[in-house]
Length: 126
Image (cartoon, rainbow, N blue to C red; front, side, top):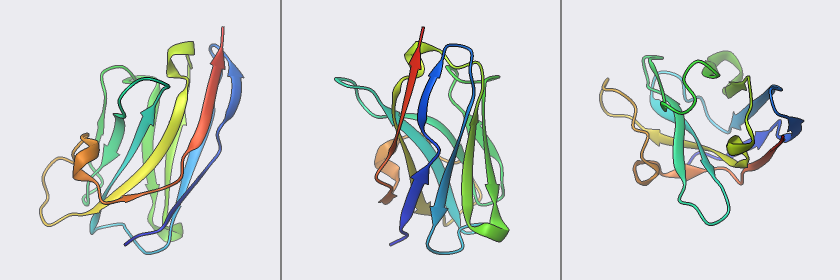
C-alpha cells in the first residue's frame, strides 16, 4: 500500500488561506487516483477534491471556486490550495489514494480509496 503523510493544516480566520500537502511513498502520477477528504466531529467523511491518473480534477460543489487540488509528480506530492476559508470548512483533512485501472473520473467516495494518511487539522474561526 501507498504510505501518505499530510501536512500544512492549522488555524486561520474566516477568509484566510491554507495549502495542504500530502507526500506519497511511491510515484502516484499516471497510475493512481488521489483525493482529499475531510471529516468534522459527528459527521461522515466527505470528499473534497480528487485527481485521476490523467490529471483531471473533480471538486465538491461546496468548495468549487475556493479549493484547488494539484499534483507534483516529480515530488510525489499532492496539494490542496484552500482560499476563502469558512468556519464550516473546519475538519480533519485526509489524503487518500487508490490504484486506478481506467481513465475515468476519479471517485469522491471515501469507500473507493485504499490508502489513507493520518490527517491534518484545519480550523477556521469567524
